[in-house]
Image (tube, rainbow, N blue to C red; front, side, top):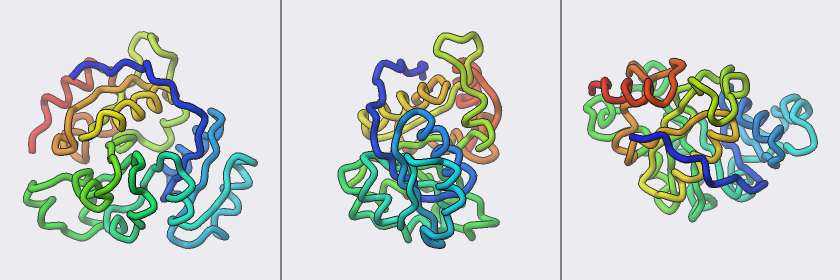
Length: 222
């Protein structure tokens, strides 16, 4: 699991963000600062995001989930797992979708296929967004670290984050996005392997460089 090479720059794009919690808001802030336009949605309606959009500035606007999905050239879905089925799939057809989710049974209720280790949250996302290209991203970092813990490429000990996808172009995008935020990317393979970087695993929400991340991924037990 080598550190992926950040050789694919991110063009200035419009990014849809579905979910305006801690992770979604942090990603919106960082993407706007990098020069992207952001269309952000939550479950309570665009009017409830007025303060966030005002803080983000002219490159951000609030919308419904459907509008954010339609507007984004690529889209971040960062909602509680129990709400995944409420996100419209049709507007995301053909697009890369970054999935930040983790399974918390206390919040999401018990899901048998996850409790029985028969699937992963990202495989569930890919199943729901069947016509999209799903990649795991930003699920194992605290929101407060997203815009503060990055460093330039080549910095000794640079923090690394894992990603996985069944689609090479989605992996390439996440690698570029991670690099733009100041992180090395480690490709852990298919979406079936994403359990290695979820809750209660050694790689979850700890600061680690690429070598340390690979070691923690190898130590994961299911």
